[in-house]
Image 1 (cartoon, rainbow, N blue to C red):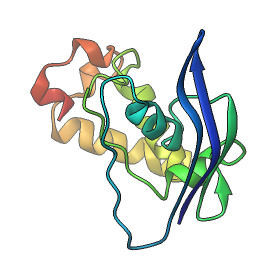
Image 2: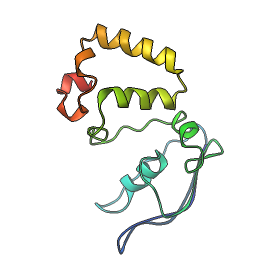
Image 3: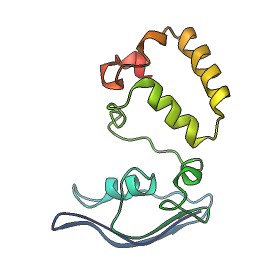
Image 4: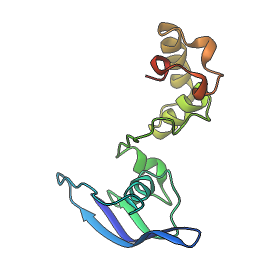
Length: 139
């Protein structure tokens, strides 16, 4: 279940999201419709734990995105319209970030990273920023 209570996010003087309340039960499907700047992306990024918000609370299955972000991120998926979200990270940092979210042990993650980096011929590229990767490498 997703519960958003009194979500507020400002950018300088502009309120992108103003006191939003939304409760979505398991199995329900919602869409956000609105003009540019209405706060759709800001709300979704806040729910995904990518963007800090000013006020309010976001709970995913009863867990707070502020106080238990890893547990929340295990329960949701976020597919941005701009896939360059993590371009500043190196490949190895990104893979470790994802492994942290899913609670994969250090030993197990290193073995898997070596295995799959070798399989996809990416071993030499893991230290490079993701921004330097080709589209195919990112996939």
